[in-house]
Length: 602
Image (cartoon, rainbow, N blue to C red):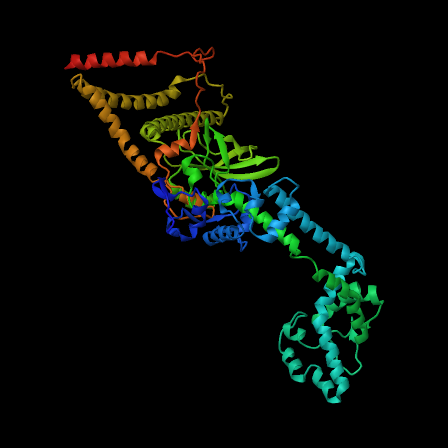
């Protein structure tokens, strides 16, 4: 019978439920178009690195769907009871192991009375076997190094000229065999003539192809004078690090010397070739035991962070891409991902429509870069160089400093008030700019007058002028003009409001507010509805296969705002509070007087 799948809908799409071992074992039959992700990186995530390395069969730094399926199939083939895959165990029970070699390794590892091999115990045993094999190999090489630590350099020098020296002595033997071969084994006239027309260097490939030295029936291989220029440096190294220490000082090598030199260094070469790259059969079984213990513990969790984003969307735990929580500006941002290059990450992550804060985090000389999603509150106080604290998944605290802000709407409330905040900033900036320009002009005019007075012949030094309010008349006039313009606009609105009946006034005020704020709210609403997790993860090397949306209610839950504890007592008396001036009363009285004036003039 075909497997019956169960799905849950969250994030705006259907996700498969992976609750049982049967769900896990049948993932190979689930259409991959229904998988939330098809690839994830092995770094920058909160998951056991050793487990990911074992699953990453091609060691390319990414886990892909076929590799996850292969890991599931490998574990199933070695388990007598696959139900352990769904039980969240810290290792593998003896009763669940089907593979005889793995079972024997487990029995030899466990003390009497214990029935489960934990991941930690299996990892320690695997490391011990590997270290034991390496130690045995090191011990076996004690007599294979005739020059001690210098033996390795001697073998490297010999390997660099081995083929060329073998070629030279074979040519010499041919010359001894037949006199006619003597001339043929040396460089031909044509090859030397062709070199004459070229621009030469000691490393020229055609020179290197010539014999090592002049070939003859009883010739020896020179180590200095008479060596092919392309091989001179390598032969000199052979003489210094191998020939002289092992055979004594000499200027050339006979074929017998060459054979003896190779024989003296052969044990070291053989010892190096025997360096354990694999493990003995019992150690291989221990390694498979470690793999099986890790798969039993981790495969279900990995599938629920890969095939589905269950941990993230159900809020029952942290997803593997959530590396910690950032506390900043009275908020706790829980959607934090690791970042290698903030500029490169932001180029793609901006498509998520999520407000992202990039921070450099430092702790005891270590450095970490993160991107934190702010999905509640506003972005008014989020700016570069602000500091916060980042807590990683191990509970360690890091000093966090904002380096970059990717600004997007955070809430409809922020969007509603944004036009008024922008208007307030614009008016404030313009007034400050206008006042600064007027002050600069007044100061420049005063400086010109002072210079002119000082350059007049016989004129006494200019006295420091007293404060002249007239210099600032222009500033006051400019500020008064701006205030007058604002007052005129307010007067026009009040005149219109006074022409309405009492029940129409609230409606008119609401309509005016909507007229100003509604466009910003509409734009923010569309952006908030289109927020998606995919680009944030894709920028980190994931291959997200679904439109993983983050709607307003779910997004709000990802950023916690500061709230007083339930039942806390709060005193509203602030001994250092600034004295409030009755501006509201003044404004109300001014409005009443203005309304009365308008009514009287009518």
